[in-house]
Length: 568
Image 1 (cartoon, one colour):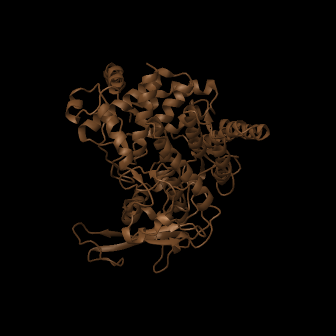
Image 2 (cartoon, rainbow, N blue to C red):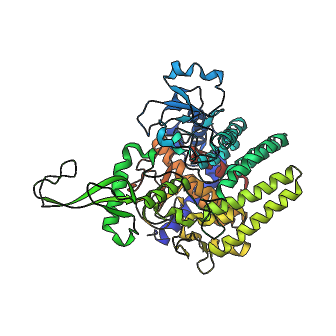
Image 3 (cartoon, one colour):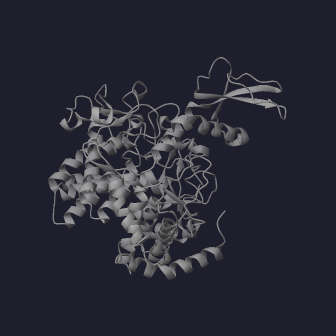
């Protein structure tokens, strides 16, 4: 349920009155204490100073013992090198220094999902250069997080680290088969939203602005970028016969990174489907003891009916006095495929692709196909930079074809928004989601389409910025939560299409909310409640903690702050 319009208008007037001074004064005053900054809400030098220092705090490398730590698993650390890759001399002392086993992957990897990760102990995958992690429990280099981190690094004049991270991704494509969800072994079965060419272009153009035109580097990056693109346009990442693409994890069963939370998370899904049987869609499977259903995998849950006050059933599915066992249930293999694929999308968890994201792999998503459109136009740009006109024309033709298919399957003229397409049911979703701004951001929306999307800005407009969706599901990628990546995409998408007013409003609301919360607890967070303008969250489905750090929030804050300043 959206907040009253009068509340939004009042909050917006207060924010707009503060932000011109808030932004302009922030670039001039440094070294100010959090207390004095809080007394002067028009000054954000404290936030900028925190972010500048956070890059070093969030930096990891293969010589740093802290890089090996994985809060999501309990096993001793292992560092894996690619098969047949020569061990760098710098790693020789790591075993003693960090008490880590250094091993090689058992085979050369050509594409994601090729290696049976069930035979590997969880571990960190080697990368040659330092990198910035998101923070909190996310202590590795992530796929789509890194684009927004890189944008922030470039804004903060840290070009060397930005290039290091891009070169790490090129290394992943070459040695691990693609851009990984993160450089952990349990993520060798999935990627994340494809931002590689956008990262390459951002670094190349930043170097160009600094006086360096590195065509040799662009030439080296090109084949790896094409290889990463090919993952998304071949089976099983194709969305049926639409000519569009989908998210798809090659693995099976529960997501391994859930660790100790695995049982409780999937038990929550079982409970939800029991309470909402019309939405189960064959996600629940009955198991007859002692055999598990051939269409299920993962933990088995037992349902009991007990007299009020009776003791809880004991272990081994044995009822206690006053309880009768009704049935044994598990989640279907298709549920887990959708659950894993949702994690490849980066939107874990949302009900956008059905409850718990269980049908993610049945959809052609707006964001993914927008990013592939951008990849195609970026690859055309790379070829023009390199003087390959014929290849550039071919990539532009691919982009035009994708845009036509997006118009056919994803655009809804009557609603004035882009929607995901369920190719299994041959129907468009009706779930309003902030990814509707992606086609505007990448340039796939025609001016007339962009104008209609802009007219629906109020669907996502909240006192703290862009809301992920208008639906309250208890999941973190739904109302009332706002995330830094979606703020940047919406802001730049609206700006690109001439809607400076709405873009400015959203940016101002987000920037002031982040700064206010920073002064409250001295942290930058993974996500925010954009309705209450608070970092306090009450997520009921998925990760309940609001992680501190935080890479993409830091990056987006710097970008929006600077670009809004430039337009004043």
